[in-house]
Length: 423
Image 1 (cartoon, rainbow, N blue to C red):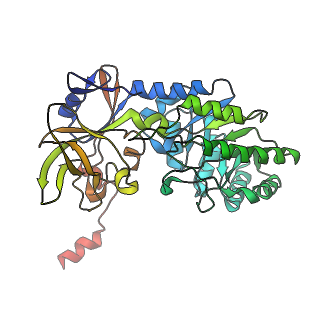
Image 2 (cartoon, rainbow, N blue to C red):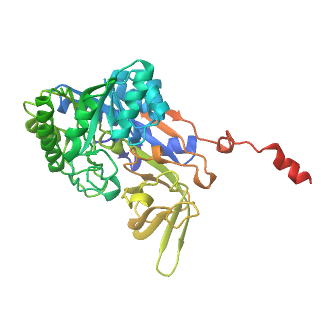
Image 3 (cartoon, one colour):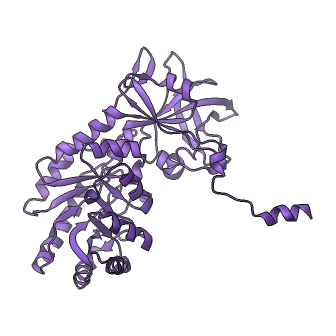
């Protein structure tokens, strides 16, 4: 459930009319509902209330510090995959002991930063990374909490680009050799083995892949304990999907029942890393129609938001429902909704049956709260759009719109280039 609704044929976010925000701030912009964000987080938390757990929000899905603060206020932690994401989470006020650090390519300086910050654990993805963490911790006189990210070779039945739990994926350590990797870790002086980690993919709409992965991890946990390697934390990652179009993903309560039933007698604190399921349907991208044009066999609606603002359709051929902010009687037609970027791949929808739109009208690109702004770029030297948070009958700009000067911040033309021009 979200709190984007039509009242008298006008789209509202909670008690704020979307068109009024557009008139005051201009377009495009991302718009988030505080009420939806808190409700989704609480539903997820309550689903696992009967077992020890930490909900570590996946920062990569939406990294705005105000959004992170909402979940921190609810008692959540953070799943980070870079030093920058750790910095954001700490600035938002996260408890470092509720932070897990994932990702295949942790640099030495990032490892040191995480150790200084006192995070709960690193989800280790390779033998060499484990050695690097051990070396860093030794130099700093610390002991690093670690888990190994296990690749269980489970098909998550999702888009290939967001599948992470198969042998062919770059993530984690093959489950067949994971026991030997844990034995090697046990020999290291500066790591503390406290967990086991698994993340099989994103936008997963079936429960069975999660249960299958959990079953394989349980067997490994029992083997580890037989060898004196205690596992306190079981990190099942994230990946629970949402409805973009016709998907019917399980409700978090259904997901939780299946996990709890399949995990009896494990005696671990669970770590979950939800992202999309919390923020996906809590945000929209608001854009304005610039032009329309037609050829013999194509109709185009050209809007002021492009692939640099929302890349998911171009990158994954992802579906986002597109609807007018103001409803009125109109016919529908088949069209491509495209942006101003100088790329044929710049589209928000292709061959989509939509209401006929006119120049100047506002459109809402729905389900854009996850992997929307966080994947935005300045391609074509386009300033990044603002992010706006609505709470009840007020809105707050939680990230200002960039201007042209922001585009060249940090750049410098060396003096010799001016000297060459004078010659």
